[in-house]
Length: 209
Image 1 (cartoon, rainbow, N blue to C red):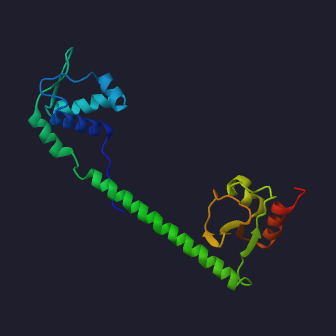
Image 2 (cartoon, helix red, strand yellow; image 1 turned 60 degrees about the horizontal axis):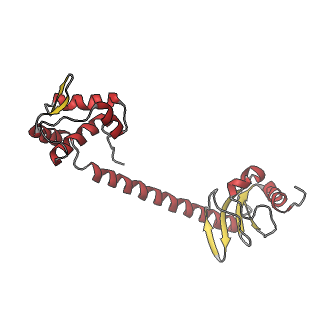
Image 3 (cartoon, rainbow, N blue to C red; image 1 turned 45 degrees about the vertical axis):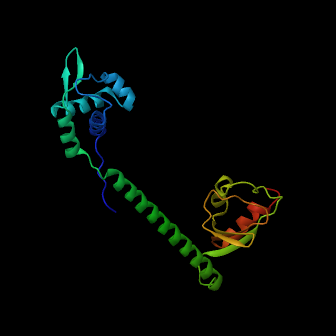
């Protein structure tokens, strides 16, 4: 993944003010708002505004006059500053990075589904050699878990088994995750050790619990 270098906030503010001067929001000779107003506008501390203004002052874009505030001095210096510091491709690079992250996430999800599917297939074919035994259990409408999320019932903590799939209305849902909900007539697929079968049975179907 390409490295993305983030500009300091005060530099971004300086660039934004310079752009506003070029776009005509502020004009040469005009006095900028006070630092406290700019701090409120940009939602930063006065110190961050001070540093942003210091950059503009060093570039002769503005002049800080004691008792008179911040005066805009030069449009030409604004253009030089923007050309020097502004990354015109920053938005494009951010979008590209987001797309790259989304693609990576999608590939990861596909890989998880593939491995889970392979595990289910392997478990059903070679259960005698697999240390993790697959269990299928059906959900009925009178069970306490109906309507609750997997995480809400603390399924793993109570049974030691991990849910890896749900058969629902003829569809197999792989890797349902902790926020999947127990619904009537669902068949859940879980893996665990030999004792997990009895723990699942007691957890779901034991009326005395």
